[in-house]
Length: 567
Ligand code: PEP
Ligand code: MG
Image (cartoon, helix red, strand yellow):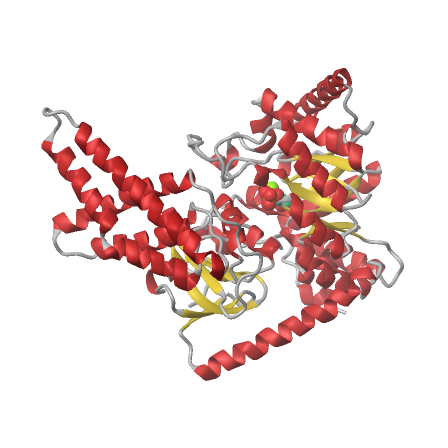
């Protein structure tokens, strides 16, 4: 099968086919010695749910509809059916899934079996299975969970196959350390692809019908560069991919040696290579990979997949964790960028077009309390090391001014409380809406730095929804209009004496490094795993020569040929 390869690497593993409900629970594997305790957790939850149903049935008055009592009975029978109980227990003992994951996996298998039945009455029983699973999950949510296994068993690698995975689901999937992701939907810069890249595991998106064709337990080969997906291949093909996997690991190990080498071009231009992170614990890996700082901390990932907003203290601890991990190197914290494909849990999107709706800075300015909480938390983290604040999706000067005012108010509040923060914190804006790229000068007078978010800049320039599978093929980072906007922003920054970085996915794509250097870019921010590839390109480039070639190509406004920029 073919899709779009969006995160490099090879994986060979067993398919774990997941439906929407299965994605919404925590996934982690338990240690073999914890199997009895986890099985007990499940059995007790089933018993408690059964007791609840019985109590409910007994409390029904004589005038309650007969169907209600009958339905409760059916639910109790399902809960005792070995197809649900024994099979779920088997997933815990054989695959070491946590109880929630085992239950939703088995629930999905049963729901699919019901859905395939000829008899309409039986087909409808699938809905009962789903309701039963919900009940048991609710009980499990209130019971103590075991610690996830820190390393998955070496002999078993699992590949997630899903129709689509939201960014919040991706965060939930981190615990189980899957070796690859395959989805029917999605494009190269959908947030699912971005999170897969940040986890350093191969991913193929936009396959179209993987979930329908792949069975749980099938052996899969995933090539995250070519976008190739093989199902139950023969031994010789498996051997070929094992060899490729090894060669790739060897290449990564060699590249890692560049970690402490400077990122300087052949003509002596210093290039700053920063890292993008989604969660504070990733800062350690960024530091270890030699990042000069964090160029983009997507703070919204602290807010996703939960129903309550993180309070000031929780946010402060998270930001301070990243700041401490970077040991004096700057950390650029982007204020909350929710909306569009990163909706908060429980928030129903009513906007006709969420990508053009109340997203990012618009969302924050419309919720002053929530915004003030985040600003105070960021300010407090700045007492532990250099911090910069980055605003997403800025299009209007008044958004910058309103943020400045909110920042000053946050400082006053901290002064009144006697809490420490660094004075003169730098404030910057993402350049991801064409409006700011075209008319950046007044922004340059009021801001300290810019970071070009190419993912959204391409989306908004070409009118291509970055998460929409149907238009993914039209999403073109090399479109002359996109390149001109990037080049114009870098030039305007140079003229105004303000730093300009690129933190979208283009910055981490080593095939585009020479192009960006040729536009005059000196600051890149990317997933930590991409740093060595980009550094290798930087160290072999001659910026003066590239600048001449790129300027000529941009003047012609024809699609650029990357081969023209090759060594
Ligand atoms: C971007 O748009 O390029 C960017 C870096 O932000 P995000 O991908 O989180 O929207
Ligand atoms: Mg963006």
